[in-house]
Image (cartoon, rainbow, N blue to C red; front, side, top):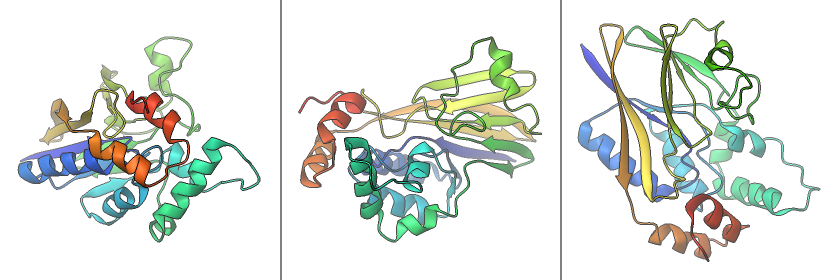
Length: 234
């Protein structure tokens, strides 16, 4: 029997990208979505996105560095980044309580395949997964003690597929934080305890409503965020 799984990362509070993705998932009747974190902050819709991600039973979630930072806010700091965190936490309302129960990493078993979910480097939630001084072994050795077949991670917003030492390492790219107006994610197919297929998907969406929400919702530091992450000049 074959099973398709959607893998997403870095939704970043973009409800329009999330809606586009869910339309595809509903059409394809995929019932399992692995979410690798950073689904709030940066974008203008932390409440709407977190409501979907935390309440749709198809999602299997871990936290990214953006969610983790909401759990350790220093209210004495006065800078744009901290103001954005405080705003995000307030926007999330009742959904904020739920993220405190979500782990930073987890292993799930689907159709006999053991899958490790992390957001960034092991033991360093803010570290970039691909900053290594040596070769690919330095990268894969971070996860050598895990008895898993697949390692999934996000954070870089860059798609990646590596097969090394009988393991697969996959980054689906960023679902909601692309400079190209694309919704990026991955569909994997598992059959007979084997990864049979891995397809990187990109769907297009219109940024107009996203820009409108940045302005209407008075998102702190919106000019920097739109320019840096979406290539939008205000």
